[in-house]
Length: 481
Image (cartoon, rainbow, N blue to C red):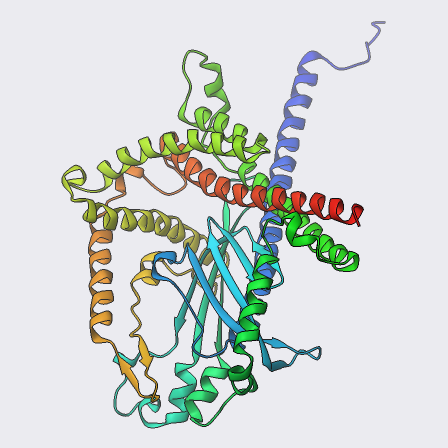
Protein backbone atom coordinates (compact mmCIF):
# COMPACT_ATOMS: atom_id res chain seq x y z
CA UNK A 1 0.00 0.00 0.00
CA UNK A 2 1.46 3.40 -1.11
CA UNK A 3 1.57 6.08 1.59
CA UNK A 4 0.09 9.47 0.45
CA UNK A 5 2.13 12.51 1.46
CA UNK A 6 0.25 15.43 2.99
CA UNK A 7 0.85 19.05 1.98
CA UNK A 8 0.72 21.27 -1.10
CA UNK A 9 2.69 21.00 -4.26
CA UNK A 10 4.75 23.90 -5.56
CA UNK A 11 2.24 24.47 -8.36
CA UNK A 12 -0.62 24.67 -5.84
CA UNK A 13 1.33 27.20 -3.75
CA UNK A 14 2.06 29.32 -6.83
CA UNK A 15 -1.62 29.24 -7.88
CA UNK A 16 -2.69 30.23 -4.34
CA UNK A 17 -0.19 33.13 -4.32
CA UNK A 18 -1.38 34.25 -7.76
CA UNK A 19 -5.04 34.23 -6.71
CA UNK A 20 -4.22 35.97 -3.41
CA UNK A 21 -2.30 38.66 -5.29
CA UNK A 22 -5.25 39.32 -7.58
CA UNK A 23 -7.66 39.53 -4.63
CA UNK A 24 -5.35 41.76 -2.57
CA UNK A 25 -4.70 44.04 -5.56
CA UNK A 26 -8.42 44.46 -6.09
CA UNK A 27 -8.96 45.20 -2.40
CA UNK A 28 -6.02 47.63 -2.36
CA UNK A 29 -7.38 49.39 -5.47
CA UNK A 30 -10.79 49.84 -3.84
CA UNK A 31 -9.17 51.01 -0.60
CA UNK A 32 -7.04 53.57 -2.47
CA UNK A 33 -10.08 54.91 -4.34
CA UNK A 34 -11.99 55.25 -1.07
CA UNK A 35 -9.02 57.00 0.56
CA UNK A 36 -8.69 59.42 -2.37
CA UNK A 37 -12.42 60.19 -2.22
CA UNK A 38 -12.23 60.81 1.53
CA UNK A 39 -9.19 63.08 1.09
CA UNK A 40 -10.94 64.92 -1.74
CA UNK A 41 -14.14 65.43 0.28
CA UNK A 42 -12.14 66.58 3.29
CA UNK A 43 -10.16 69.09 1.20
CA UNK A 44 -13.33 70.43 -0.41
CA UNK A 45 -15.14 70.80 2.94
CA UNK A 46 -12.16 72.51 4.55
CA UNK A 47 -11.81 74.92 1.64
CA UNK A 48 -15.54 75.72 1.57
CA UNK A 49 -15.57 76.47 5.30
CA UNK A 50 -12.49 78.67 4.96
CA UNK A 51 -13.92 80.70 2.08
CA UNK A 52 -17.29 81.13 3.79
CA UNK A 53 -15.55 82.46 6.88
CA UNK A 54 -13.63 84.95 4.69
CA UNK A 55 -16.85 85.92 2.89
CA UNK A 56 -18.64 86.53 6.20
CA UNK A 57 -15.72 88.61 7.44
CA UNK A 58 -15.72 90.74 4.29
CA UNK A 59 -19.47 91.21 4.43
CA UNK A 60 -19.28 92.62 7.97
CA UNK A 61 -16.44 94.97 7.02
CA UNK A 62 -17.85 96.17 3.72
CA UNK A 63 -21.36 96.79 5.06
CA UNK A 64 -19.84 99.11 7.65
CA UNK A 65 -17.58 101.10 5.27
CA UNK A 66 -17.68 104.85 5.82
CA UNK A 67 -18.72 106.44 2.54
CA UNK A 68 -15.91 108.00 0.53
CA UNK A 69 -13.03 106.22 2.32
CA UNK A 70 -12.56 103.16 0.05
CA UNK A 71 -9.07 103.07 -1.52
CA UNK A 72 -7.75 100.60 -4.10
CA UNK A 73 -4.45 101.95 -5.51
CA UNK A 74 -4.17 100.91 -9.22
CA UNK A 75 -0.60 99.69 -8.87
CA UNK A 76 -1.56 97.30 -6.08
CA UNK A 77 -4.25 95.39 -8.03
CA UNK A 78 -3.79 92.70 -10.68
CA UNK A 79 -6.34 92.33 -13.46
CA UNK A 80 -6.97 88.65 -12.68
CA UNK A 81 -7.61 89.22 -8.97
CA UNK A 82 -4.56 87.23 -7.81
CA UNK A 83 -3.03 90.32 -6.19
CA UNK A 84 -5.04 92.92 -4.28
CA UNK A 85 -4.57 95.63 -1.70
CA UNK A 86 -7.49 97.73 -0.48
CA UNK A 87 -8.05 99.98 2.52
CA UNK A 88 -11.03 101.79 4.02
CA UNK A 89 -12.45 103.25 7.22
CA UNK A 90 -15.27 101.28 8.76
CA UNK A 91 -17.61 102.04 11.62
CA UNK A 92 -16.82 99.99 14.69
CA UNK A 93 -19.31 97.59 16.23
CA UNK A 94 -20.88 97.90 19.65
CA UNK A 95 -20.73 95.09 22.22
CA UNK A 96 -24.14 93.94 20.93
CA UNK A 97 -22.76 93.58 17.40
CA UNK A 98 -24.48 96.68 16.06
CA UNK A 99 -22.65 99.24 13.93
CA UNK A 100 -21.68 102.24 16.06
CA UNK A 101 -21.59 105.42 14.02
CA UNK A 102 -19.55 107.44 16.47
CA UNK A 103 -16.16 105.77 15.98
CA UNK A 104 -14.22 104.20 13.12
CA UNK A 105 -11.22 101.96 12.52
CA UNK A 106 -8.91 101.62 9.54
CA UNK A 107 -9.03 98.24 7.77
CA UNK A 108 -6.70 96.85 5.10
CA UNK A 109 -7.00 93.66 3.04
CA UNK A 110 -3.98 92.38 1.15
CA UNK A 111 -3.83 89.34 -1.13
CA UNK A 112 -0.49 88.16 -2.49
CA UNK A 113 0.87 84.73 -3.40
CA UNK A 114 -2.30 82.98 -2.23
CA UNK A 115 -2.22 84.55 1.24
CA UNK A 116 -4.98 86.90 2.38
CA UNK A 117 -4.23 89.15 5.36
CA UNK A 118 -6.65 91.47 7.18
CA UNK A 119 -5.15 94.28 9.20
CA UNK A 120 -6.93 96.85 11.38
CA UNK A 121 -5.78 99.47 13.88
CA UNK A 122 -5.55 96.87 16.63
CA UNK A 123 -5.22 93.45 15.01
CA UNK A 124 -3.68 91.45 12.20
CA UNK A 125 -5.14 88.17 10.94
CA UNK A 126 -3.93 85.72 8.31
CA UNK A 127 -7.28 84.65 6.83
CA UNK A 128 -6.04 82.10 4.30
CA UNK A 129 -3.01 80.67 2.52
CA UNK A 130 -5.17 78.95 -0.12
CA UNK A 131 -6.67 81.77 -2.20
CA UNK A 132 -6.47 81.93 -5.98
CA UNK A 133 -8.20 85.26 -6.56
CA UNK A 134 -10.53 87.88 -5.08
CA UNK A 135 -12.59 90.11 -7.37
CA UNK A 136 -14.64 93.02 -5.97
CA UNK A 137 -16.92 94.90 -8.37
CA UNK A 138 -19.82 97.32 -8.34
CA UNK A 139 -23.13 95.66 -9.14
CA UNK A 140 -24.47 98.37 -11.47
CA UNK A 141 -23.03 99.18 -14.91
CA UNK A 142 -24.13 102.72 -15.83
CA UNK A 143 -23.23 102.25 -19.48
CA UNK A 144 -25.55 99.26 -19.85
CA UNK A 145 -28.67 100.96 -18.45
CA UNK A 146 -31.66 101.60 -20.66
CA UNK A 147 -34.27 104.29 -20.07
CA UNK A 148 -36.74 101.72 -18.72
CA UNK A 149 -34.42 100.02 -16.24
CA UNK A 150 -35.35 100.46 -12.58
CA UNK A 151 -31.89 101.92 -11.95
CA UNK A 152 -32.73 104.72 -14.40
CA UNK A 153 -36.29 105.40 -13.18
CA UNK A 154 -36.25 104.70 -9.44
CA UNK A 155 -33.70 106.76 -7.49
CA UNK A 156 -33.89 104.66 -4.33
CA UNK A 157 -33.46 101.43 -6.30
CA UNK A 158 -30.56 102.96 -8.21
CA UNK A 159 -28.93 104.12 -4.99
CA UNK A 160 -29.16 100.61 -3.60
CA UNK A 161 -27.52 99.14 -6.68
CA UNK A 162 -24.79 101.80 -6.75
CA UNK A 163 -23.99 101.03 -3.12
CA UNK A 164 -23.93 97.29 -3.78
CA UNK A 165 -20.74 95.26 -4.18
CA UNK A 166 -20.32 91.81 -5.72
CA UNK A 167 -17.48 89.75 -4.31
CA UNK A 168 -16.11 86.57 -5.90
CA UNK A 169 -13.56 84.58 -3.86
CA UNK A 170 -11.79 81.65 -5.53
CA UNK A 171 -9.76 79.25 -3.42
CA UNK A 172 -7.77 76.16 -4.26
CA UNK A 173 -6.38 73.39 -2.12
CA UNK A 174 -4.27 70.38 -2.96
CA UNK A 175 -5.73 66.97 -2.19
CA UNK A 176 -3.41 65.14 0.19
CA UNK A 177 -1.54 62.29 -1.48
CA UNK A 178 -2.32 63.33 -5.07
CA UNK A 179 -1.51 66.00 -7.64
CA UNK A 180 -5.18 67.01 -7.83
CA UNK A 181 -6.33 70.46 -6.75
CA UNK A 182 -9.81 71.32 -5.50
CA UNK A 183 -11.25 74.70 -6.52
CA UNK A 184 -14.17 76.44 -4.86
CA UNK A 185 -15.94 79.69 -5.73
CA UNK A 186 -17.72 81.69 -3.04
CA UNK A 187 -19.90 84.60 -4.18
CA UNK A 188 -21.62 87.21 -2.08
CA UNK A 189 -23.28 90.61 -2.54
CA UNK A 190 -23.79 93.36 0.00
CA UNK A 191 -24.90 96.97 0.33
CA UNK A 192 -22.52 99.55 1.82
CA UNK A 193 -24.99 101.10 4.25
CA UNK A 194 -23.40 104.50 4.78
CA UNK A 195 -23.10 105.07 1.04
CA UNK A 196 -26.70 103.96 0.49
CA UNK A 197 -28.07 106.30 3.16
CA UNK A 198 -26.14 109.25 1.76
CA UNK A 199 -27.36 108.56 -1.77
CA UNK A 200 -31.02 108.28 -0.74
CA UNK A 201 -31.02 111.06 1.85
CA UNK A 202 -28.85 114.09 1.07
CA UNK A 203 -29.40 115.44 4.61
CA UNK A 204 -28.15 112.23 6.28
CA UNK A 205 -25.16 112.82 8.55
CA UNK A 206 -23.63 110.10 10.71
CA UNK A 207 -22.81 110.68 14.37
CA UNK A 208 -19.17 110.39 13.42
CA UNK A 209 -19.47 113.22 10.88
CA UNK A 210 -21.28 115.41 13.43
CA UNK A 211 -18.45 115.06 15.92
CA UNK A 212 -15.66 115.10 13.37
CA UNK A 213 -15.26 118.87 13.09
CA UNK A 214 -14.50 119.19 16.80
CA UNK A 215 -12.34 116.08 17.17
CA UNK A 216 -10.20 116.12 14.03
CA UNK A 217 -7.03 117.35 15.73
CA UNK A 218 -7.37 114.94 18.62
CA UNK A 219 -8.03 112.01 16.30
CA UNK A 220 -5.00 112.83 14.18
CA UNK A 221 -2.79 112.80 17.25
CA UNK A 222 -4.34 109.56 18.49
CA UNK A 223 -4.04 107.84 15.13
CA UNK A 224 -0.36 108.81 14.89
CA UNK A 225 0.29 107.27 18.30
CA UNK A 226 -1.78 104.18 17.50
CA UNK A 227 0.17 103.62 14.29
CA UNK A 228 3.37 103.21 16.33
CA UNK A 229 1.84 100.27 18.21
CA UNK A 230 -0.07 98.85 15.25
CA UNK A 231 -0.02 95.11 14.54
CA UNK A 232 3.01 93.95 12.58
CA UNK A 233 5.15 96.88 13.83
CA UNK A 234 8.60 96.48 15.39
CA UNK A 235 8.67 98.02 18.87
CA UNK A 236 11.48 100.03 20.44
CA UNK A 237 12.39 100.33 24.12
CA UNK A 238 11.65 104.07 24.00
CA UNK A 239 8.09 103.34 22.83
CA UNK A 240 7.44 100.85 25.63
CA UNK A 241 9.06 102.38 28.72
CA UNK A 242 6.26 104.90 29.28
CA UNK A 243 3.61 102.14 29.51
CA UNK A 244 2.49 100.39 32.70
CA UNK A 245 2.90 96.65 33.33
CA UNK A 246 -0.77 95.63 32.67
CA UNK A 247 -0.66 97.41 29.29
CA UNK A 248 2.65 95.74 28.45
CA UNK A 249 1.25 92.32 29.37
CA UNK A 250 -1.74 92.93 27.12
CA UNK A 251 0.58 93.86 24.25
CA UNK A 252 2.64 90.75 24.94
CA UNK A 253 -0.46 88.53 24.67
CA UNK A 254 -1.32 90.17 21.32
CA UNK A 255 2.22 89.51 20.06
CA UNK A 256 1.99 85.86 21.19
CA UNK A 257 -1.22 85.51 19.18
CA UNK A 258 0.49 86.98 16.09
CA UNK A 259 3.45 84.66 16.52
CA UNK A 260 1.17 81.61 16.79
CA UNK A 261 -0.71 82.70 13.65
CA UNK A 262 2.55 83.14 11.78
CA UNK A 263 3.83 79.73 12.85
CA UNK A 264 0.58 78.02 11.84
CA UNK A 265 0.70 79.73 8.44
CA UNK A 266 4.40 78.78 8.14
CA UNK A 267 3.52 75.11 8.74
CA UNK A 268 0.60 75.21 6.27
CA UNK A 269 2.81 76.71 3.56
CA UNK A 270 5.42 73.99 4.15
CA UNK A 271 2.69 71.34 3.85
CA UNK A 272 1.59 72.89 0.54
CA UNK A 273 5.14 72.75 -0.76
CA UNK A 274 5.60 69.14 0.29
CA UNK A 275 2.42 68.25 -1.63
CA UNK A 276 3.63 69.99 -4.82
CA UNK A 277 4.04 67.49 -7.66
CA UNK A 278 7.25 68.19 -9.58
CA UNK A 279 6.63 65.47 -12.16
CA UNK A 280 9.69 63.62 -10.86
CA UNK A 281 9.60 59.89 -11.57
CA UNK A 282 11.46 57.86 -8.97
CA UNK A 283 12.97 55.70 -11.74
CA UNK A 284 14.72 58.77 -13.09
CA UNK A 285 16.84 58.75 -9.96
CA UNK A 286 18.49 55.57 -11.21
CA UNK A 287 19.94 57.53 -14.11
CA UNK A 288 22.75 58.80 -11.88
CA UNK A 289 24.62 60.30 -14.83
CA UNK A 290 22.08 63.10 -15.32
CA UNK A 291 19.41 64.96 -13.33
CA UNK A 292 15.86 65.02 -14.65
CA UNK A 293 13.87 68.27 -14.62
CA UNK A 294 11.62 66.99 -11.83
CA UNK A 295 14.57 65.89 -9.73
CA UNK A 296 16.20 69.32 -10.04
CA UNK A 297 13.04 71.02 -8.77
CA UNK A 298 12.63 68.31 -6.11
CA UNK A 299 16.01 69.24 -4.64
CA UNK A 300 15.16 72.96 -4.68
CA UNK A 301 11.82 72.24 -3.02
CA UNK A 302 13.55 70.33 -0.21
CA UNK A 303 15.87 73.29 0.38
CA UNK A 304 12.90 75.67 0.52
CA UNK A 305 10.90 73.46 2.91
CA UNK A 306 13.91 72.98 5.21
CA UNK A 307 14.65 76.73 5.31
CA UNK A 308 13.73 78.24 8.67
CA UNK A 309 15.26 81.71 8.53
CA UNK A 310 14.56 84.62 6.21
CA UNK A 311 18.06 84.41 4.69
CA UNK A 312 17.81 80.64 4.08
CA UNK A 313 14.40 81.04 2.44
CA UNK A 314 15.64 83.88 0.21
CA UNK A 315 18.60 81.77 -0.91
CA UNK A 316 16.35 78.82 -1.80
CA UNK A 317 13.95 81.17 -3.61
CA UNK A 318 16.77 82.64 -5.70
CA UNK A 319 17.56 79.21 -7.19
CA UNK A 320 13.90 78.61 -8.04
CA UNK A 321 13.55 82.11 -9.55
CA UNK A 322 16.56 81.56 -11.82
CA UNK A 323 15.28 78.15 -12.94
CA UNK A 324 11.74 79.42 -13.61
CA UNK A 325 12.96 82.52 -15.48
CA UNK A 326 15.04 80.43 -17.87
CA UNK A 327 12.17 78.01 -18.53
CA UNK A 328 9.62 80.78 -18.83
CA UNK A 329 11.49 82.52 -21.63
CA UNK A 330 11.60 79.24 -23.54
CA UNK A 331 7.87 78.60 -22.96
CA UNK A 332 6.87 82.13 -23.99
CA UNK A 333 8.81 81.73 -27.24
CA UNK A 334 6.92 78.50 -27.98
CA UNK A 335 3.52 79.96 -27.06
CA UNK A 336 3.61 83.44 -28.62
CA UNK A 337 4.50 83.96 -32.30
CA UNK A 338 7.27 86.53 -32.73
CA UNK A 339 7.85 86.80 -28.97
CA UNK A 340 11.48 87.86 -29.30
CA UNK A 341 10.62 90.80 -31.59
CA UNK A 342 7.82 92.29 -29.45
CA UNK A 343 8.25 95.66 -27.72
CA UNK A 344 8.58 95.68 -23.94
CA UNK A 345 5.03 97.03 -23.53
CA UNK A 346 3.64 94.29 -25.79
CA UNK A 347 5.60 91.66 -23.89
CA UNK A 348 4.02 92.77 -20.62
CA UNK A 349 0.51 92.40 -22.07
CA UNK A 350 1.28 89.03 -23.67
CA UNK A 351 2.95 87.77 -20.50
CA UNK A 352 -0.17 88.65 -18.52
CA UNK A 353 -2.33 86.93 -21.15
CA UNK A 354 -0.04 83.86 -21.11
CA UNK A 355 -0.29 83.55 -17.31
CA UNK A 356 -4.09 83.77 -17.50
CA UNK A 357 -4.30 81.19 -20.27
CA UNK A 358 -2.17 78.76 -18.28
CA UNK A 359 -4.48 79.23 -15.29
CA UNK A 360 -7.62 78.96 -17.45
CA UNK A 361 -6.29 75.73 -18.94
CA UNK A 362 -6.26 74.24 -15.45
CA UNK A 363 -9.64 75.77 -14.59
CA UNK A 364 -11.20 74.26 -17.74
CA UNK A 365 -10.05 70.80 -16.71
CA UNK A 366 -11.24 71.30 -13.12
CA UNK A 367 -14.66 72.51 -14.30
CA UNK A 368 -15.03 69.48 -16.57
CA UNK A 369 -14.07 67.19 -13.70
CA UNK A 370 -16.53 68.89 -11.35
CA UNK A 371 -19.36 68.50 -13.90
CA UNK A 372 -18.64 64.78 -14.18
CA UNK A 373 -19.14 64.25 -10.46
CA UNK A 374 -21.95 66.82 -10.11
CA UNK A 375 -23.80 68.11 -13.22
CA UNK A 376 -25.15 71.03 -11.15
CA UNK A 377 -21.74 72.11 -9.89
CA UNK A 378 -21.08 75.84 -10.30
CA UNK A 379 -18.23 76.55 -12.68
CA UNK A 380 -15.24 78.51 -11.53
CA UNK A 381 -14.98 81.67 -13.66
CA UNK A 382 -12.11 81.96 -16.10
CA UNK A 383 -9.38 84.48 -15.35
CA UNK A 384 -9.72 86.20 -18.71
CA UNK A 385 -13.43 86.84 -18.05
CA UNK A 386 -12.74 88.27 -14.60
CA UNK A 387 -9.97 90.50 -15.95
CA UNK A 388 -11.82 91.86 -18.98
CA UNK A 389 -15.24 92.53 -17.45
CA UNK A 390 -15.23 96.32 -17.55
CA UNK A 391 -17.59 98.12 -15.19
CA UNK A 392 -18.16 101.80 -15.94
CA UNK A 393 -16.95 103.80 -12.97
CA UNK A 394 -19.03 106.59 -11.44
CA UNK A 395 -17.88 109.47 -9.29
CA UNK A 396 -19.71 111.98 -7.13
CA UNK A 397 -18.80 115.64 -6.89
CA UNK A 398 -19.49 117.72 -3.79
CA UNK A 399 -22.99 118.62 -4.94
CA UNK A 400 -23.92 114.95 -5.07
CA UNK A 401 -24.27 114.87 -8.85
CA UNK A 402 -23.19 111.58 -10.37
CA UNK A 403 -20.93 111.84 -13.40
CA UNK A 404 -19.11 109.29 -15.55
CA UNK A 405 -15.51 109.71 -16.55
CA UNK A 406 -15.73 108.66 -20.21
CA UNK A 407 -11.98 108.92 -20.79
CA UNK A 408 -11.21 106.58 -17.90
CA UNK A 409 -13.83 104.08 -19.04
CA UNK A 410 -12.55 104.22 -22.64
CA UNK A 411 -8.99 103.60 -21.45
CA UNK A 412 -10.05 100.59 -19.38
CA UNK A 413 -12.05 99.24 -22.32
CA UNK A 414 -9.01 99.59 -24.60
CA UNK A 415 -6.82 97.74 -22.08
CA UNK A 416 -9.42 95.00 -21.86
CA UNK A 417 -9.55 94.58 -25.64
CA UNK A 418 -5.74 94.49 -25.89
CA UNK A 419 -5.61 91.77 -23.24
CA UNK A 420 -8.31 89.71 -25.01
CA UNK A 421 -6.44 89.98 -28.31
CA UNK A 422 -3.17 88.87 -26.72
CA UNK A 423 -4.97 86.03 -24.92
CA UNK A 424 -6.36 84.75 -28.23
CA UNK A 425 -2.85 84.89 -29.72
CA UNK A 426 -1.33 82.62 -27.05
CA UNK A 427 -1.10 78.98 -28.19
CA UNK A 428 -0.54 76.31 -25.54
CA UNK A 429 -1.23 73.27 -27.76
CA UNK A 430 2.42 72.20 -27.50
CA UNK A 431 1.92 71.54 -23.78
CA UNK A 432 -0.52 68.69 -24.48
CA UNK A 433 -3.53 67.87 -22.31
CA UNK A 434 -3.72 69.32 -18.84
CA UNK A 435 -2.54 66.74 -16.30
CA UNK A 436 -0.56 64.83 -18.93
CA UNK A 437 2.23 67.34 -19.71
CA UNK A 438 5.88 66.57 -20.21
CA UNK A 439 8.07 66.45 -17.12
CA UNK A 440 9.63 69.76 -18.20
CA UNK A 441 6.24 71.53 -18.04
CA UNK A 442 5.31 69.83 -14.76
CA UNK A 443 8.64 70.83 -13.21
CA UNK A 444 8.22 74.44 -14.35
CA UNK A 445 4.65 74.62 -12.99
CA UNK A 446 5.89 73.17 -9.71
CA UNK A 447 8.68 75.77 -9.55
CA UNK A 448 6.19 78.61 -10.08
CA UNK A 449 3.91 77.22 -7.37
CA UNK A 450 6.85 76.87 -4.99
CA UNK A 451 7.92 80.45 -5.67
CA UNK A 452 4.45 81.70 -4.67
CA UNK A 453 4.51 79.56 -1.54
CA UNK A 454 8.03 80.78 -0.79
CA UNK A 455 6.92 84.41 -0.86
CA UNK A 456 4.15 83.57 1.59
CA UNK A 457 6.71 81.78 3.76
CA UNK A 458 8.91 84.89 3.82
CA UNK A 459 5.94 86.90 5.11
CA UNK A 460 5.23 84.39 7.89
CA UNK A 461 8.91 84.32 8.92
CA UNK A 462 9.06 88.11 9.03
CA UNK A 463 5.89 88.31 11.14
CA UNK A 464 7.00 85.47 13.42
CA UNK A 465 10.48 86.90 14.03
CA UNK A 466 9.18 90.45 14.56
CA UNK A 467 6.62 89.23 17.11
CA UNK A 468 9.25 87.15 18.88
CA UNK A 469 11.58 90.15 19.12
CA UNK A 470 8.72 92.31 20.41
CA UNK A 471 7.92 89.76 23.13
CA UNK A 472 11.55 89.62 24.24
CA UNK A 473 11.70 93.42 24.36
CA UNK A 474 8.45 93.66 26.33
CA UNK A 475 9.78 91.09 28.85
CA UNK A 476 12.94 93.13 29.19
CA UNK A 477 11.02 96.36 29.83
CA UNK A 478 8.73 94.66 32.39
CA UNK A 479 11.76 93.25 34.21
CA UNK A 480 13.26 96.72 34.49
CA UNK A 481 10.16 98.25 36.14
